[in-house]
Image (cartoon, rainbow, N blue to C red; front, side, top):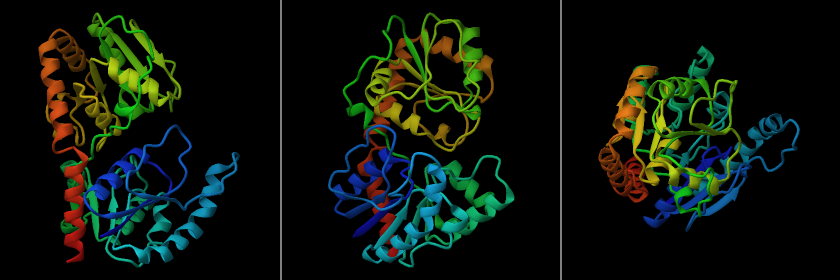
Length: 351
């Protein structure tokens, strides 16, 4: 089977390459069609042809507008080459109002909805997203929660919506680690772009209340005012962090916390699973579908403080949670299992 995986803006290189490699191991002939990724190292895609066919010219100034100017001709150029594939599987389409009209004629067409619906969407965004989804033969989502949103909120045909879990992102786990900070106490790690919906303010409130004999490491680029990010035993790296430093941070972590207010699924979570780390999550989106994670209500700093206190005082429970993370990474969230489910979806669409 000839498969095109298409991610024009290279939004998710680790995911793209992990899925492409797993499909190739399962016997598919895979071509990953994407653009150059400008932030850090890109994982290998074993057994896969990688073609950087989008956004090949972008000056440093006005890069976003240069990309938009290239998007239509690049999509039209790709539409002609799509005839070589048996299945076209899009990972992200960045200009949905246009992309609904630029899809290749080659069928079947599949789209993975990494962000199921936009946060605080305008009516035009929802209508554009619905048109795009309706022109696909299948929509892949990473959780039952995401599937329900597409059925209930967008009124999509349930037969088009397929749940295939997000796989573990193990490229950092295969990177030689470098220490981010010297570890002197147990480490609780918060990592990722810092945005309001990720609930870091709630975590810091909980941290001050719990006052554990541990360190909270906050790692990631702020996309909001970061003046609130401080506190006792809080260490910060509010910058772009190299892959080796991130590997060092995950290796050092005794617990990874994602106190999000809303989400479908998170790449940070699947990176933590690759390191076999215990997870303290809020009960939002697809998070409750992760086996072995500890859950607290979103936005509840008191519940989060209580969970932090209890978990850091119970190493045996942290060990059991870590074992559950490793079992998930080796089983249903492993890429070979996900590739098999994806190929079964492709085959069903061709039948």
